[in-house]
Image 1 (cartoon, rainbow, N blue to C red):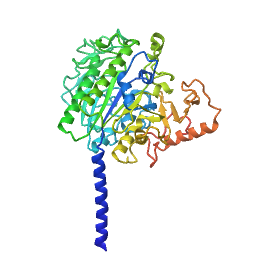
Image 2: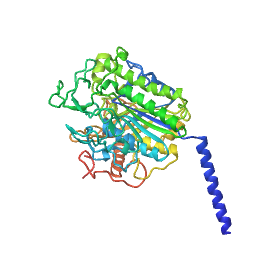
Image 3: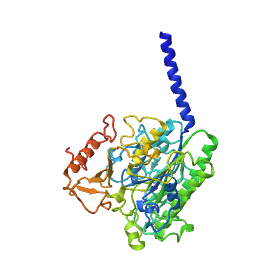
Image 4: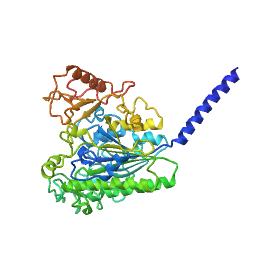
Length: 510
């Protein structure tokens, strides 16, 4: 009898293993590419904004061949915290970073033992690469003015799950600026510069000539001195990032054709400096900014064309989004060109209103996603970790992806609606909002009072109806309080925030 039970158990295991292997064989794991623009507003996509003063054919193609999330959100309204949320599936305000962004040189915000998109996929057999702008902190050798570039950079993408890194440490106004590959720059940042005036936009340029010492560096915009490599020019970022991405995919698929790959491609555009190449000058009807968005779209199209030309498109999931809404020059574009980078939504980058965090959000995966589909429910960039885990058939541990909800059911059938918990938005100055279906409650902060908006009737957040829907207001406040205090949005064991309480939680008693 004991022998029979063992034989039965072995048979069950064998059947399950066979089914699993057949499933893997019939549904190979997809390649995954996440393309992340910088300061691109919801209205900077011609698919989402019919009144746009420039066309974005590559983004329109992603929409036509994939899925558009019309209510998709970044996890914060500025660079560093949004990138943390995207890569970890956890809101950045749970860390010690409560307001603002990082400089280039600071301990990385992602702890070494924190699961990321890259580490999840690497642990499940993927080749992983990041090409582009990091902006989560790095440890450089030496100090400003006293570097030893023969020593490696630490606490950077290669320590957070990526096999390969080619890019720059942070936004171009923060330095340290060089073309880093792995832990070293082929041409180290041994010179110095500052923001120069830009004749195509209202911002600045980072371009030669460069100075030999900080004291010799002219500062026409009185914006401080930046460490820079002799061969670094701001207008080359998009071309170099795209070239290196295509080269890495080509090398990887040639050397290990049966191994899936993950590429994280965070561009530097249309973040300042607005520096379109001359071939894009005069394109569109929104000045230098429109030219820069057209160039950005062109490079996205290069990635899509490469996938097509090499037979990779069918089983590659391409995710496209932006880290936050548009920079303050959106006001000037409305006045001068009639182009609204936030479309119908209020304000832009840094703001707690929709224009600060409702962003373009597309996914294309021809093998799985119905072409030309739309999902109108809430979705967030923190959801990518749980979505990728679900695609792989993996369950996230309790201390990973605390604010991540799988979107896989929607990818397979966009007519479905996910019974999800709310999404929390967060502004640069630490103010919070909770969105749940049609309702959005903005929390009080300092002298600022509660605000409630019915986004189904008032997407521009023009009419504050707080005080007229007490049941909804109380329910939303209870939900955001629980999400903060439990250290997670999703079901699971309570997790600690990195700080017990902070002053922006004005509605929660210390």
